[in-house]
Length: 277
Ligand code: FE2
Image 1 (cartoon, rainbow, N blue to C red):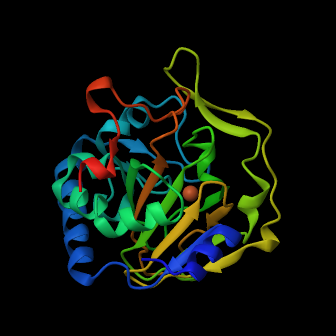
Image 2 (image 1 turned 90 degrees about the horizontal axis):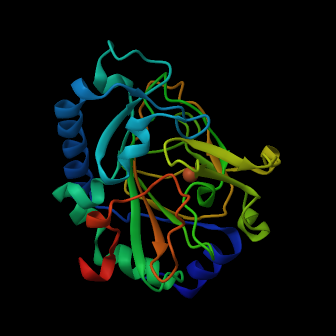
């Protein structure tokens, strides 16, 4: 359980670092499972993921991945390269389709934290393993997660779990403390009317990157991120990877916006944590 001071810090800063949230057995299980998914899927996966703009527009492989487990590769790496070295991420329904990630995602600890920071009906909408590969791990530009995962009122919350140490050398998270208090910029990533592609809508926000602070995390740490918190990460030019498992939750009392890129078919709707744990 979070202390009152931790909750206050989260509310005032828009993020909170929680040390030693995952134990090593969970991390090992998660890493092994990610490797076996990659092994079994890499041959059929051909999509390149642009971390610069967070996605690939007009790419069915990406657009249909909200209810699947799919592998995405770095822009700088070719599919002919070793898939274990060129993988950017696995997403986006690990929490509902893979037993190891399901167990890790629908945990009592995460549920308790989610309710403490104000989600009355914690509901996981997206899961990703991000690899941030040595030498080629791409930059993620400054953004707010609610741009991509929108509810009204906003309730998107990131649960960023370090599967390896994340530091300034291998592209750790960076963010602007208190930036969530300005709210979500008038900028959204939405499906087009026909539902077949996606586009950005609104005016491109400009944030003062000089205000960014580094959010270094140790293996096993959890970082909570408000959906309006402005954050980014630099390229990884170091010899070390920077694996992370990231969940995004919303408050299930609010409607999932029908224009969000991520949509589920009626027979696989989002699950409330309380119904699973
Ligand atoms: Fe993000």
